Image 1 (cartoon, rainbow, N blue to C red):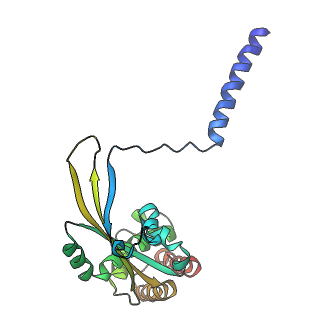
Image 2: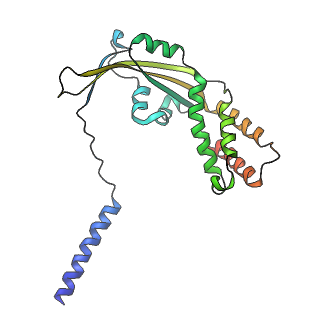
Length: 222
């Protein structure tokens, strides 16, 4: 009998340990690196600015979706592009020659594709082939209007390893932020979807998926 209770007790302890592990989130692991980054200069240096713009800080930490959650941009779709340059003239040239449609197309292609996949009835690779891929590409190739440049920022940074003397890399990190009102973009995308639905060769499943896309777009946007 004692042996039975010992075995039962051991099993109970193991079960409790597993239950405890399953019911709690794992502790985040601290990321360690010997490489250090130092900001030598930035766009606001001459004006005595000592902090990053909130949108830049948020973008670096959480991406463009994080920027869209900021109070200033809740009614906007945000588009952020970034590059690295060896000197300030090259950084400014990139900003001056920046083509807005490229960043909008790249970001929206990802979002629209996710929207169609989520709205599809069944597996897209089985039922739809390349049809939706072509529609997504066509939709995002359209020159959407209403995008406006909100801000840009550059930082001149040094990346180095403290354990290796006199070895470092200096470069300019450049960011540019554009926005477009959600209602404006959603309306333009909705019109493109309706235009695509005029295709007489679309199947009922495809039409149903398109209708689902329009409903999701109306309810929650991209």
